[in-house]
Length: 395
Image 1 (cartoon, rainbow, N blue to C red):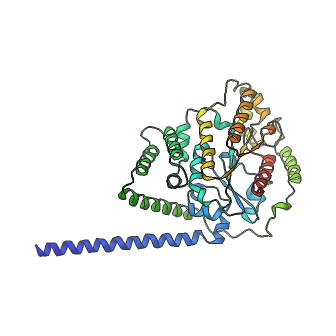
Image 2: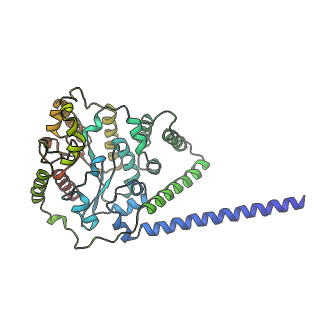
Image 3: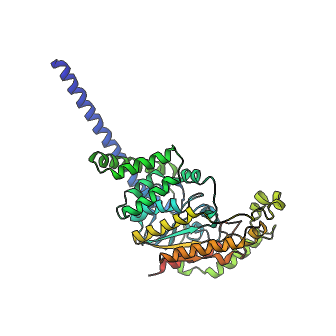
């Protein structure tokens, strides 16, 4: 009996020692990763990298979101690269006295951006955020749930839940809307439901479990980030002083470039886009959208959640109201009154919460504002960069 007790004690001690060694290794590895990610040379290298591995890492985003930067949330338009005024080029990948920190990709609409803002709010040093809104978000779709789940981030949702500056009532609204955007039985829905239960349950076990879960989620994000990003040297040359940029001259350059790169069609659409997606079926597109609407109630409610969150967190927001390509949408028969109603509804909702609107809806027919049917183009980036910079300089 004594031998069995002795063997049990030895095994227990061995288990405790092994567990402690594991903890030391995990914490040590985490400390190593943090030191690497916070290295200024590495931080400069990922300043303008907009990918999940960076956006999901709160530590990486903390390094990117400095006092001289503004967080810009958006969707697929953030990948509409341009060599004139796309922020990476204009601000030399961070070698500038002002930077636009781009975060987002296709299918990331108002609700996802609300969750992201809730996760990032403590990292924002100048209390400002920009949200680029696209009319396409307000077109009802049968795959809304699949789209939401495809861009859902567990680390950012967890960080949003743990944000104590968000009122319980608003947090509850956002959680319920997130559940509405998921499929029955999906892994995403189960995760949200489990986290919601843990949030409601204040037991010691749940608190301890929540701590370790957050720690491991953040560690996983840092590992994913570090694996995906290599050290890059700071850009060469003098630092860009944005106040010295002549935005009017940039518009002239953009006009010339846009005309040259979209000379195979009458819509101001980039040649390669027109050839790949439109040319073959050009005649079939004529009046194909005459029954389309921009009346997705859920999307308007989710945009309102974003604005409510800004109010809760005392964050100044600028919502960018981006138009569609008016000439193309007219050709496709998409009702103009629908477009105008959507633009007006966005503006009115933002103003209701005393936030700022960068309303570019009057650029619907301005050639080269967009590069295709709906994404920012040559002149669009010039207008946006200037608007964001002016917003940054306010107050």
